[in-house]
Every structure is written in C-alpha cells, then in structure tokens.
Length: 322
Image 1: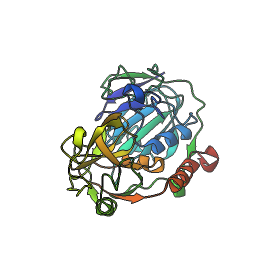
Image 2: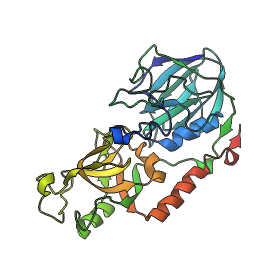
Image 3: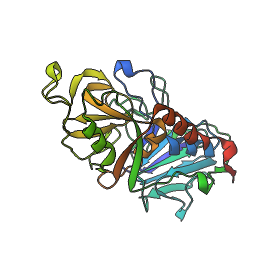
Image 4: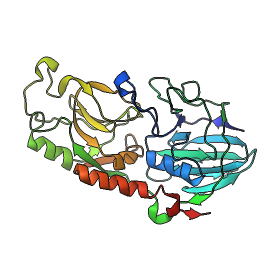
C-alpha cells in the first residue's frame, strides 16, 4: 500500500506530531506540522492517532494517486478534489486504488493544507520521529521534501470516517490575532514600556520570505531600554546565546521573527514574547507577503485555558460520524 506522488507542489513534507522532542539541548528544534491543529484533526477524522505521520502541503498545491483502499481527510487551507471532483475539507472520505487526490491553492484565507491517510505514512522514524526537519535534512522520506514519483508507504488503519462540525472548524483570516505571553526577555531590562505597547498594538505584516524556520515581520525601530548589549554585541537586541522557545518572537536587530518548528534552537537575540500553544496553529496559516498579525498579551493561566479549549475539538466524541 503506497501513495504515489504525481505533482509534489512546493515543499510538501512528511510530518508527525509533536515531532522530534527532547533534542533541543543538542541543537534540534522538533519539526512537525506548523498548523498542529489541522494536522491532528485530519488524523482523528480517519481513525489515526492524532500524531500519526501525514503530509503538510504549503499553498495547497499537490497531486497524488492512492495505491491502497482506505480513508483520507484534508484539513486546513486548500481546494481538494478526488478524481477531479471537489471534496470537502474537515471530513473523511473513502478512496480506492487508482483514485487521484489533488488540491489547488486556497480560494480564501489560509496557507497550509494537511492530508491524513488511514494507517498513516509509514516511513522509518529517525531519532524518534518521522517528521522532516527541512534544515537538518532529518526524517521524512530520505531527509527531503517530496518529489514526483515518490512512493510513500501507508500503514494499516482502522478507517473510521468522521466530520468536524461547522461550529468547531478553525476559522482562517487575512488579519490575525496571536495570543502571546511576555518574554523570556522583555521589559524593563530590555524593552521599554512604550516598546511593549507598540509591539502589542501595532499590526505587523508577514514578510514574503517566511517559511518553516520562522515568520518574519516588518522591521520596527524599538527604543530599547539600554544603549547596547555589552559583551553580547552592539545592538540592544543582542544577548549572550540562550535557548529559544518554539513560537518565540525574537528580535533580530529591528526585525521581529516568530520561530517555526524548523527554526534555530538557540541564538543571541532577545525573545520578547512567546506565542502560546493554543495560537501556534495560526502561525501555520499565515500567508507570506499578504497577511497581517496583531499580538495580544495573555497570562500563563489564560494560555492554559486556551490550550484546553483548543484540545476540545480533538476528542472524537465531539465530531460527527460520516
């Protein structure tokens, strides 16, 4: 049982969730889907474990042929079809050997599409995960994005068919709000109070060069609470090298950047905020060069509550049978 890649799209990769955790001390971020919510939902819809290996499809463009009988689900942003006929997002559907699965660009907001197949993509784990780390060339199929002619092994699945109710489907926007907690480096030692107000009140444009490593935002001239960084460097945004959190908003000179799952695990820039777990999925749907972001500060307690709310939809008991 395999999935044959006919048109690989733009950097279509195999991912799993939560990816390759526990290796940050060795310099490796976890990889995994940028939109972890759509990815896990696709797996739940077809009866898989939420973290089973599936495909991440930027810009929604992709074509493949099923060489198995089973169940698949598309979640996220795209315009999927089966043998040329449109099929719905957020809903499982049966496929037979020879069926062609395809998708075009999303008709509206959103950027990444996810495809789960019953049984999951059964490539060998590397360092404990099947997720491709694009910069490290680790995991996935031969440590790379997919190319035409690839045959992806598909595991044996239960083939359950579920649908996400309309009221529980994630909503995509062109102007997003991301919940963040402060720090670990914020005011008053690094940022001024006015800097933080500007950070949380401005609307930031997503740079065209954003990818799985990080989402770059438009440059901004922060005032900073200090003139320089002493031994760490000339610019106030510099610090002595420290560990970075996934979803951390680092400031590289004057450029804020949201760290993605293939980003650097450490470095010498201040991390002024961290996108909370419940909002990380939104980062995966930001369209480079088009969308805007506004940051909203929340407390750690509120971040925990938001995370619990996000996980609610992943319970099959809250989904509809097809």
